[in-house]
Length: 106
Image (cartoon, rainbow, N blue to C red; front, side, top):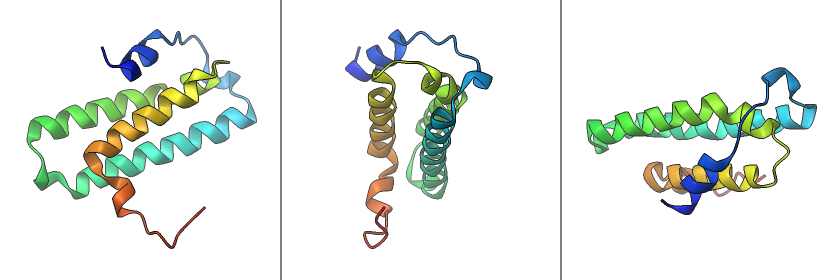
């Protein structure tokens, strides 16, 4: 099993969304927006991929977005690393980072 999947699967999630701190909420919103960007990018490139690839990517994005608040509510330093790796993995398919405007820096 790839390291990212192993890290993701070992995270025990028992947090309730109402237990999110303000910082966690900001982080959750940021991650949701990033995953949403990948979802939109995938839709723009739909004709470039097989239906199987689209279906699998959409399912993976839905699963991650459904749990991102629970993951961020954990007091585990690995959460940011895991989410970062997931975003990087999605970027390997969508190539979203290549579409970014280099003049728009944060």
